[in-house]
Amino acid sequence: MKTRRIAALSIAFLVFGSVTVPSAVLAEGIRPSPTPSPTPGEVAPNYKNPLDLRLPGGEQAVSCADPDVIRGQEPGDINWYLYCTSDPLTEDEVSEVPGATVFHNIPTFRSTDLVHWTYVGDAFATKPAWVTGGMWAPDIAYVDGQYLLYYAASETTLPGGASAVGVATSDNPTGPWTDSGTPVVEPASGGQWRFDPEFLSVGGTNYLYFGSYFGGIFVRELSDNGLTSDPATEQAIAISNRYEGTEIIEHDGWFYFFGSATNCCDGPLTGYSVFAARSESPLGPFLDEHGVSILEGRVGGTPVITQNGNRWVGTGHNTVFTDVSGQDWTIYHAVDQYDPYFVNDVGLTKRPALLDPIDWVNGWPVLRGGKGPSDEPMPGPVAQPGQVTAYQPESPEDQEPGRRYAKLSDQFGGKKPDNQWTWVRPPDPSTYAVRHGELTWQMQNADLHPESGTPLASVLTEPAPQGDFVVETKVSTTIPAEGCCQNYVQGGILIYGDDGNYVKLVVVSIWETRQTEFGKEVTPVPEGYPNYGNTVVGPVGDETYLRIVRQQVGDTDVYTPYTSPDGKNWDRGGAWTHDLGDQPRIGLVSMGGSGDFETSFDYVRVSALKR
Image (cartoon, rainbow, N blue to C red):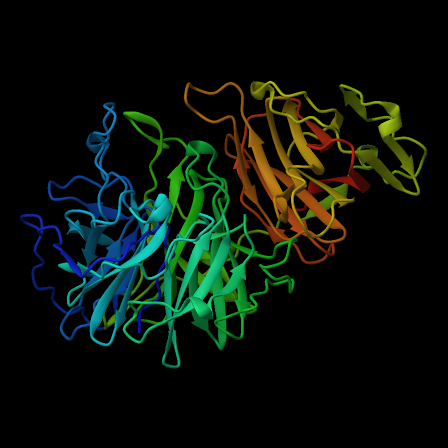
């Protein structure tokens, strides 16, 4: 069986005879020397993100996206092995000359302590003949005395050139690897993304999970040797347009799905995050902490790995493993919002690998006791027998509403919004009304992206209080719970600096899904940088409760979203930092559509942050 691993991205295949693809030769000077056994009770070394991934000349690898890890399985092998997607490893490998940038074919690293890693080459010196695109998101397994390396081929020589899943075998975790020459999962006839392979073995049956946004996530049974899959056994696991990067683990009698959502690679506005759901069967259905399925249109998912306001954004595509002491850990990639791009290619996002512990609270995984990605020295995992870890989980401070600001809170109990509200671009009065204790507002055929040239939406605003505060609302929409495609119609709250600078928490329709989105708009930005980025939070209900917490941390304003389907059990999502000026305002929006749908606001409550 395979130790816990990560998800994969895209794969493609074509039927050839078996083709041997030599592993890259081990780089000079990095062959492992014998490592003495730890002294009993020796404390595992500390680490600091990003992981220390060293190249032959001593240089640090600056990217290791979609990481997967395995412990050496053969007797006497005390090493751990890390596999990355096909990105450049250094700034120098990125060229301004088209086609000259170096993309590695699954770079591989080795470590004896899970903290310090050494590059041992690429899994493939050249791509298999049927792969024309990238070799993405590796997934490593050990089956019947043999290592299996699944990978995503983003483009192929197969009919239509669509993506597929491939696999290579080796007796050694560093190769040489022999490609099977045929796809494990064939391209879809409609071109749906056959990305992100994930291997799991349960009770003698092997499974492969695969898929991504375009088409959704699926699982199939594999052959005993793991080299072929049975299309007749295929089952849907997750709805389209929500998840990729599948990771499945067993814990306390449950099978846990980890999936990554939104954009992996949007530079400083990357909002990629990891969500969990669980099932008593490896075939699902997988439900989140609220009991919502990840197959529903109002798609489920409990946030696990989300940005917390430090430099790391886009925290996603994770692998989970258990160290020698029994503590669970995860390796995932992220983006440094202050150094997001390769120097010679603005737009090509660097995604270094991060390490943090996974803890379990009431049967659900949380990252680092709930504190999110670390950016300070941390006690490391136990990689070898005899060691111990100094890690102890610590819960973050609760972010809850305290004293209510009565003059800024509105129960919509009159015939119009209270007097503190003013309009930015007032809508037609016939499109909104206060009645029966609600503000009901038709969704406008407009948005808040001034750089796009689209019509700008109306915003109902009031002053935000000074200092830290909490704003909450309860919304419902007339968007159907299921079906496609009322794209990007939305309603919710924002903290508004101006039309080009805000954070926004809304209920939104995205193709087949209904999601809660937390977006950030920034204007102006350097040339080549994005203006808008988004992350997503918890599931949508018949009524959805939305909360934004504004907290000053040092010189930085951190905005953290919460959502709830019942007003009692809240999901905490990924935080954005933003400078919204000295006098930001609280706002409401109902937009993105043509008036066919409405947003209803039950109240707006503004409070101080509870101390």
